[in-house]
Image (cartoon, rainbow, N blue to C red):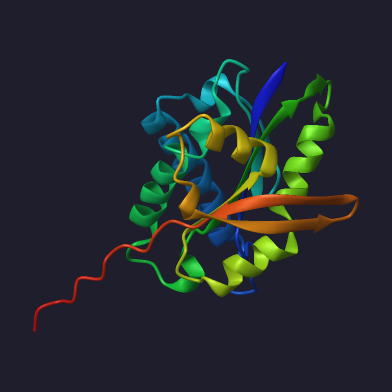
Length: 195
């Protein structure tokens, strides 16, 4: 069965300013934030298979869940959760996430998830072009990369996503050579403080 796949990764987790206590806090905040965004979206992280990846996680949703829900509204909900988490924190303490969304066939064995789709998912997440976009946009709490096949599916189903909010990107990682789409949340309006 084809299943929705989501991978999240904490940006700059290994930054030397981040000691062990801060890394533990960031991981805790990541899991709490992802779970909250799932709940707001009407999904349950508890219904999913997930695997810890040290500075991130792999999440496999049940096959009956529409993978397009992880573009919109999930991406917007996760953005809101991260903005609330980060609003009073300095750069070193902020939780910023890169997230990848794909769908495809995935098998379980005794050690976890295996298959072409999970490999492609992580190639998207690790794409140097995606990492550059996040590095060049330090105020973005979330960056979302979507596989070309999922983006096309969402686009052709009408009204599921705002195509103009995404921009194309090339994924060139190991044997993977493909096109994908990235979404960065719009910046919130700046409200100057009164004197």
